[in-house]
Length: 560
Image 1 (tube, rainbow, N blue to C red):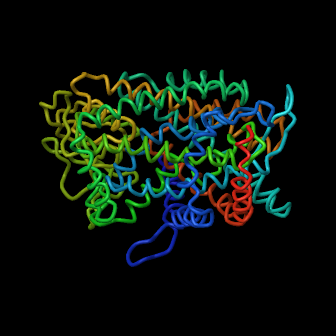
Image 2 (tube, rainbow, N blue to C red):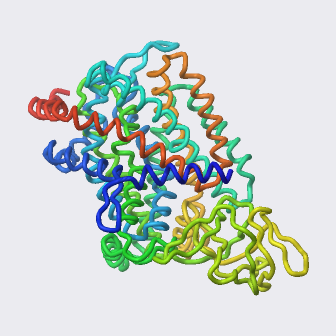
Image 3 (cartoon, rainbow, N blue to C red):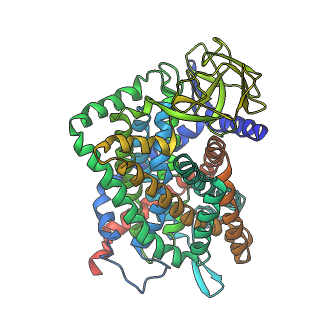
């Protein structure tokens, strides 16, 4: 497992760190391409995300629906399916991870990613509708679309290799980003609260996912049309209650977020003072993971919408980054920052064989560096030897370790990372120790909600827990459709059922992987898969401009 973790971290470093050097820092190429394409499309389309947002909301309500239009699902069901994939763990765990690593300022860069991403989402969904295909499957015909189709059909047959590359990479991304990370977060959260073995949680959620996805897009659309709005209302309603109870802190917290975006201080995970590019990178990474603009996944769901007007589905897609990031992610971040839990240490059982445990050393700039396969660590009166390798939880060093939950007996002895145990001076061994440690991911958000609604006991805590479970399952359900459309494109209809079966197996596997490994591997695939899509969006942008002008000149919705 250590070798796999090292390989993934290396790949993650090159994908998200390779770029253009500016002074002592480097702006990742992925960040430049993602935001640059969004800005280009924003200007090219006349700031369509601001001018046509209201029309998108009107279309999504079903006001202009025609049941005789070609497609598999309604505008609302297509939006619900896409939102079920985007509104999920990224809004709960992803925001927390961005703040953990990049500080509160990471939210600002999530906003920027979302605002320019609205234009990107409009363009890719409009093209997906324009170049979608009717595929023959068991039981009848089904609509299929997405970047692989508009790359091949829009740019021409010579571009089919790029389309195949995209389809293969997104199919693999679906296994992890849209599936394994979801089950991992659900299992990790339930284990932290109820001490349930991740294998048990993974088996249960995998069975639920299988029961839905084997029914195809129509069943997926029906389920997500119920789940997505219900989950969003529950989560947003609870977060809004916390914000209203602390209304006086909203503006100061927003001010802190903006200030930290450009003048970041040392982050809780040891980002280092003034590391603005690190803060930016984490905001963009988690922003992309959350709203998926430019990734090319959501167009696959929107391609199935019942309409003969591609732009009408494009304006519906504008709503996604706004709802997902500008509204829901912001609420999550405000709760985490204003309650102060993002930098707070809480009593934690430090399992020496656990996936959240690592070993680090301090660097000159105040950041921490992970140490692979460290030697024994001497601990005296609970404190690791100064200047050496230190045990860390969520990559933040623990300051003092104890042998009991009440933290009355400091540990003295040797921690053996290789043996995954601690041996005290009297010869007794321990598989876990106790310490005050920082949280990250969904447990951090749960802590913020519990603190924000402390007058109601653990109510906020369990609301987030319920949403983690439902979001994780619904996101995996939606991503299974993205993946099987990719399998269908590459290998044909015969590959769809085998893909769904493997997808369910990967859901279970994701539940038992270490948290950091699951997220890092998902990030690697995420950073690669967006490249072919962004190339196609830029090259096909003249067509999007023309279709948009034509649609709003004709105003076809007036005749519905």
